[in-house]
Image 1: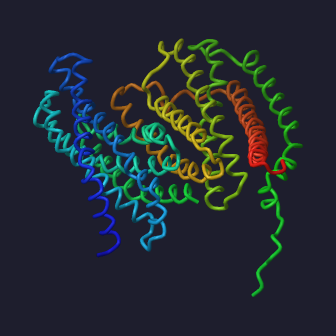
Image 2: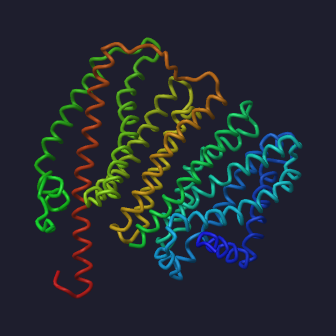
Image 3: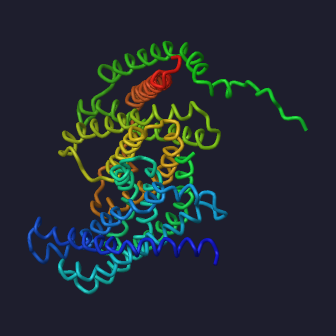
Length: 217
Length: 253
């Protein structure tokens, strides 16, 4: 078994044995979406109009929640130091972590989106577009999140500062993510979103690996 | 092959020594301060007394002379920080760390001033302090990135280790800023088709361009002075930290 596959298996096992984490994440996602109607009122047309934005905000916040477990446990128990000495380059290790992070934190959100679609009075067409845009955009959120988590891994209260760093970088993802659902040029927005995800996922492992190795020297 | 034991002492290597850097650049400080002051006096004289009112905006056009230089600096400072970040990552140049750290709060300040003067100018001319216009929005995002970097610097205990990590993030930001700019432009034209700014706007007459250029240089030199002074302060701060650490360890101070 290659090192990369071993990394994938290790990360998947670690995050699935934690069990409760995934459920908490989904619960948080649904609660953020469900709390908005209490703030803006139960008007179905208004809710349907802002539903794509709400779903994207909920997904953005939920993706932030899972970042703490990306590098911090490995940093605290010293596994990250060992991983840096592996034959596998650190960027490949970060890439494996990024893939698993997306699998355990974005895919459950995608599966939970139908619940929010019903609660927020989405029609079938915009529900379908929301699923596509979330599937295309969450890799970029995960990638920016990985950079933020890597930069703050050696700070003790890094969990507080990572969202501040990640949020400005994620603005294009939100713009094109919501744009691909609601805007008249949704086709262009979907393509931009996909391009953004590809670029972020391609570059993030190298940036995050560089940040981790600089922080540990 | 015998290794070259004696490091070549060109100016680049010499500047890597913080003490040498401070010693070499201190004589520059006062001439730069005087030049900045002269430029500001000249610029304000032009701006207040020797430039025409706008036929539509009246006297409020004079806000432009402080607004445009600040807006220029908000991006120029990020460019300085990115070059310093490269210096930190590629050459591990110690003064690049210091330059990066000193520039972040200054960039935040100039960006905030650009937004503030823009709001003051927007109120009488557009009738609103804030509009989700493409340029204003991307400047706001830039301010958030600057503030995030300042917060990041403050979060690290070990400043030497912080520098390389923050350099990585600065460069990630440098790649992202054009993307943010593009996406925000796309987004804002979607929301408000009639933009306030037009690329084919009226060309400025020389009577406005001259004071604008003077103020532009005045603010740029102001940044250079503040940046240099902040770098000196940072060098001294690090020296004090080292002395305190040695004292705490019970060694000779």
